[in-house]
Image (tube, rainbow, N blue to C red):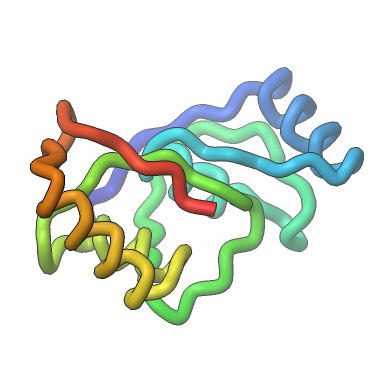
Length: 118
């Protein structure tokens, strides 16, 4: 998995931490956002403002600390991003979703269709 630059501002960190404090769900849009939030999660409850590079490689059986739901594209088979979403939702559910997407001719990759994983 390639390194990615990320930036979480103090305002964004504060908003996420307030949402967590109020027991609201954290919904990440995109795998880059997931990696950033999981990189800066401290004690599984809060995030700190930070910018930099992440080398975080998320794969089963990773236990997510910050993200409760995610919106992401349909990724290519055998990719690191497919491993990441499988760590989130389980391999069986992801395989079922991909079979349905293929059957219904969903578009894959960056400009394709997306899914909400809860």
